[in-house]
Length: 428
Image (cartoon, rainbow, N blue to C red):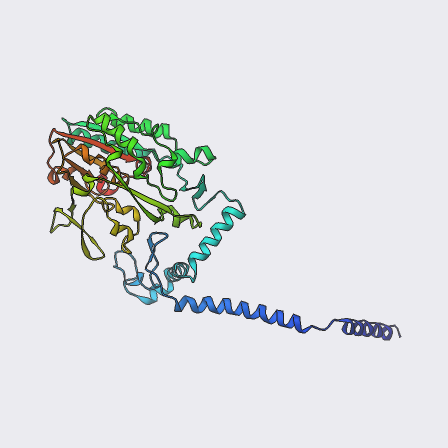
């Protein structure tokens, strides 16, 4: 009898629950249908976009090559992998899945828009101060760089000191260190930064015996740098150029001799790395009768040439060398608009001044920062030779240029590059 009552009670409860449930309205059905269709459209749209949209070989914003189709590593030279063209070995290794993962990340539809959305969320919504080593402060983009590599600094400074002693025993030698942007930006805003005092102590301990130091830290400021790039601005470098010229005992460059030209839309190296929607810089270059009238040559290091030539190759086409080349700024074959200054990275370059009133010459050992400082000093010398020590071994320099006593020698290197281990060419 009790079991019968329990069954009746459960039946009544179920009946009540069934009869009291509200029916799904047509509006709810429509909303659910729309939600499902949007989900399917996004899922299959992105899936189809991955196969239908063109794949880019280069990322202009990140300034790097994009991943190749899976299988490219299989056909690389046997010295670079252990596959030797064997698909089965490639398939059974982790390499295939790694290649697929990297390829899909690089070529995902609307990848740049997703990167920007993620960066905006991290910086302005979640208030994360730095993301993947990039930070934005005082209107400037920058990258964290706070680990002092004492071994690298010692090696770089020692190499430079050996060059001073071996190559220029009878020349006037000077050296300067260009402070990076973080010297002015990181510390005042609570970010980690290099120990600049220790960096300079190490440099002076090697180079101070052979050359005279010109301090740039006290005459520069944050405004001397591009907002989206690591480099300094040419229009702001006259105090630097005049300080160097005065110490070297040559005519000081006069800003009134130069005309300012502006190119909008310069996105520096950190603009793409940070992925934030920051307004691009305006690249400004300073031109004069000296910069327009000089003769520029670069040393072609190819074994079948090994000589100075008045051109570079851009997109497979020979391009005449000039001090400021707007074509390079706008060229799709150039990943960096800063290469407008003396065609970017070159191992050895000469700039001959036909208007010179002196026979003095300058040899400048420099990194990329020297490309837009050298044009301001052209009027002070008959010839400026630019040497990038990262790209040419100092032992062959006497075979490339004639070294004589009427040359001033300037080692101009950024604190960032001092903190990076020398390239094999430089160390060799």
